[in-house]
Image 1 (cartoon, rainbow, N blue to C red):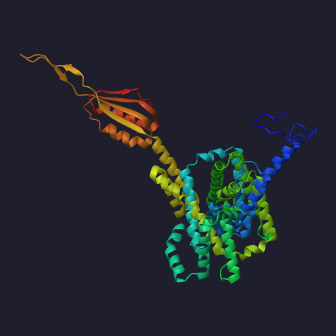
Image 2: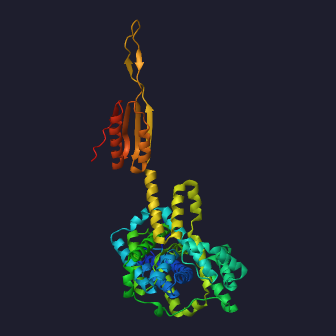
Length: 539
């Protein structure tokens, strides 16, 4: 008997017919399990090659040993990668926290870093338990992009000095002010010529690698190619440039120091922990939203992902490593490489562990100027140029919020800059939603009988036409000056009808102002005043 149209006969052992009892389902199950590994294994290798130079570069720029960045990457892969939340985004040390970590290390010491990260992890665990992860989606996108732009520019300005083997100034304005002198030294040769040439060459490789044939560009990630070429040139030519200092993995891992607890109990220390938590959580969950748009697999559970990040940062804190976030660069690479399950990110952590344990000496060949070039490139990519251009054309208010947030981060610090951006976004939203329409119209005047004069005839006399003031929209304290200006311009000798029935919201400040104006108008005017509906009684 032939198979129905559109179907093919199943061979024995693959489906129900002709298969031995109890074995009908084994073939499809083996196929389902085997297919993801065909994609996840090569994807994990690609993510590993992208993560390796970034983990090292972020650690060096943060002022801690390079191995600590790898420890965070390993924990992000082996531990967070196996936890529920998001299936394809990859966690590790992020360039977005580099500036804040560096400032914390300089202020509190490297021994306090573990306590800061541990506190961050515990806060994230509490937030995940309270199901606060979804609320991060209420953050203004302009503030987030302004935060990333401020971080990117600060990172870029600082690493330009490292690219020339120079020490960067401590504050953002000082870094910007020193750029002309740095450029002059680089051009005249006062800076280390070999470091400048190698750093610029690494930047060029990073910028133009994507224009190579697709097979080459996809097989070897640009950061790995740029750093590998720089290390090879440095070793072969024995260039006089600074290189990474390598210690053993166990030598750099340290438990949190109790002596640093007193300094972190201050207001500045608590603010640093809150900044770590806010930025790490926001970057993770916004990265999750972006990654979810890139694939058709399971969506991210924001609360579980926040809990997973809390577990990872708690463990990183106990090991004295860098804080972690979900990183959009590695996550996008994972999706684009064809990963199907979380196995790819777990394997990438395994490859990082094997590399760190078996080949630590390779890191000592990498010049610092090459890592600085990688971070300059990463910082530039954090600045959302296209989004800024689009906002300037369509939503200038959002562009102002983005720009103010970025400039505030550069001129103050990360935590204060983000708070300024959030405050400005709230004020802007309140101002935009507080639309108040004030319409003043003249009503037809009523007719009054004219007294009959001697020898004359009676005739109508027009009295002064009344004014009707219609209020609609939302009357809040933000619009109070405009409302009072309009009411106080009304003539005192004409009847007035105040109609506020069109208001959707009347706050207490406007209620008090309207009641006070009505009392004063009645006291100084002989013309009647009608208010419909009657105003609420205020205390």
